[in-house]
Image (tube, rainbow, N blue to C red):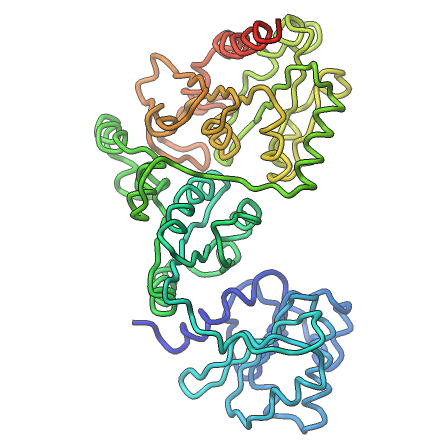
Length: 478
């Protein structure tokens, strides 16, 4: 059962992401741990807020303040809080008593969209969204579409990529699709024509024990929820600390190995195959990718090399040996037309060490966003990497893809891929382990930063797979 306190908190979830202030009076704890409270700021002057520049906050939450000041002070405080919000920010006001005048007072503050106006347990919650329009509006009055479906998926790029596969089928069925994601999912899915609205929450904004009542709240509000959380981690790959993480290898391989990521997600959503994932770059993103291709050279064979994924077992140590660092033979020496782009997050910059200034290498780790990298898939000639979201997106496209399998099998990851080569480690008894590893632990033989399954893949098998695509391109151009 959802408590009244939880109901107020859940109403606020999508409106209090990012950086914001908790202006509560008489409460002992914050509703969300990421809020900035008076205790944390050692006596922040809430009547001036000079510590924050105008337009710098994503939200302001007030509880028990307006009831304790004069009418003139009420308007002055509302104007002050409003000035600190960015465009698109939210002023959230919780009143013990509603005198019916708050909206009138806000009329002297600026233009807004009243997103929430509700009563819970005798308390009155208002959420004013700061807009640039020249007239205020009240979107809370709009009814929830009767055909609404909330698709829930948190996690990394690969998780949200698989999620995107079910969205076209839901739209085909006439559903109004709401994507409940975190910032990572929003980054990937912006512009997706199969999404009607986003419901975004911060990573770890809700505690684990709050997620089940949160999903119940979404079901009450919208009617239908497709919850894809743990359809990859948990259902296909086990998580540390859970009993199935310690199952014998052959048991995990037998019962988890029969599953494919796309098929499992489609079954959960009640959407028929084939998979239809998608990334929808803007015209600007497409143009930038095309320019990068031209700058490198239309006659070049561009290899997009994904250096690492989001887990410790998704790191390729073979990079330098495959490509051939200066003074060492490799693919860059063998094929004059080859150009390599390294991509990854900020931490992957260290894996680019030694390639500074190389005329046939572009180092983009930590420089390109995920969207910029995905937009390049239409411009490159081959993609190489571990089991990551970028490689997953490449594999189901037409671009040749070489993937180094680590914790899952070819069936689990690649059953619906098109033009690919899966590098499978041999003589590694634990492969595929169907485990997620978040550090050096008892279930993964990590040495020199690489798991046993990755170490079992020789540089030569990478070279052979990549060379076959280069030579295929050479024959097509002849």
